[in-house]
Image: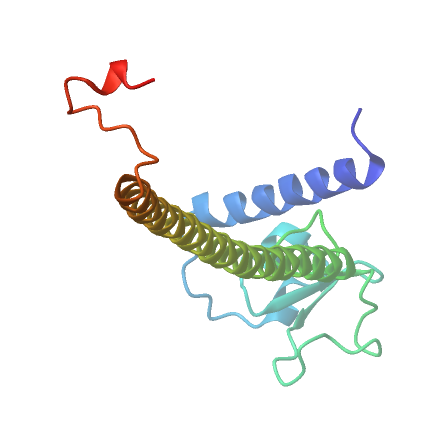
Length: 180
């Protein structure tokens, strides 16, 4: 079952997609020469056809968007009553939704970077450990071979001493089995 935060996130993404889709599918508005105050008292849709206009629902006025400040001041119109780009979403919700989406994107980016760094570190550590293990195996085999070689040399040396003192029965001699 989905969590409430997941549902809210999905709804926000769908609403942003709808806003963006409605903006991108609409034909490009013709440049309007009329000032925004001309649309005061009319509908929100007529006002917002001009992207430089801001609709205030408290008194149904169409105002010039204050481009000097990022957000319209509350003396002009409260953020919860201001409409820009779409009549069905207020400016405050638009700002919150954009902030949430930007935050989620940044968090995903940071998580991906950390995960990639961790993977790179763990893979390099794993490769280093594998190389070290291979070196240990090679070293063990080399020592084993040297040990076998020394053992064979000792056996040969001991057999020569035994042969010298007659302790080793010579298998090459035809009568060696009858000496007992």
